[in-house]
Image 1 (tube, rainbow, N blue to C red):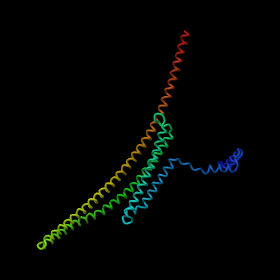
Image 2 (cartoon, rainbow, N blue to C red):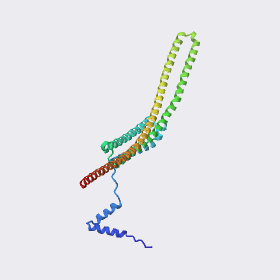
Image 3 (cartoon, rainbow, N blue to C red):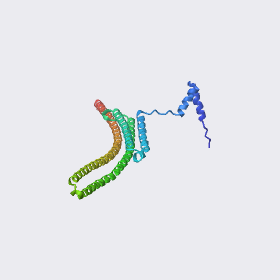
Image 4 (cartoon, rainbow, N blue to C red):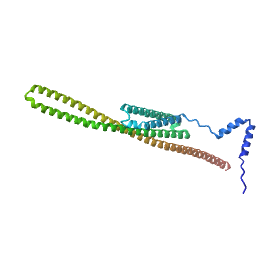
Length: 309
């Protein structure tokens, strides 16, 4: 069996000699060889830069939530104002990320509208694949943002539940205070009834004042109880609305994915239809040529037979 000889060095020498004969010097030749070995990084498009920036913003939002998770959930670590500040910053983050995603969607829609040819048919298949890829990127970013917002909704629900749990014992204490005030008013009236025989007018005035103060306290406690109940109801409604909004966002993401699949399928069907139309046009032209040739030969044959006879 013959041995295989490595001719790589011979090829390098031949390339070097040819390059020198074409006017390349050593430094230029070394730069060309280095460009073949170490490729220059491809310049990213504006859409890719914006998508990567949006992804970095979402990751920064997730890191911020992980960093301040305990501060937001634990009631003993921070105050209500600090927790409100954390919630405001997270909401601002989410709004900024959603605006960036909307900008990407608008850029894709504009590019898709500009790439359509006659009768709304996409002219370039490569551009259609690029647009489909961009739709997929936007869908992935939307799902990533939805997962982060769902985590924050869970933290917010935990906070609201803690507030409700703290409000329940206060309500019980207020009810006990109301019952104690009623008992004290009853006991005071019963104690005042004993010396009523000696000082009827004075005791009647004191009893009236105590009754008025008791009624005022009951009205104040009732109004505070109603305010607490209204606040609890609003918190529960807000948490329910947030959960409903996150559910709708997830449903929209799923619908966008379905629309993306349908768009890809419709693009394939349009391409197949264009191919069928081209084949039909070619068949029609060939059949027309054959018919004209047949009529010409038939006419020539009839004239020849008439001339011959």
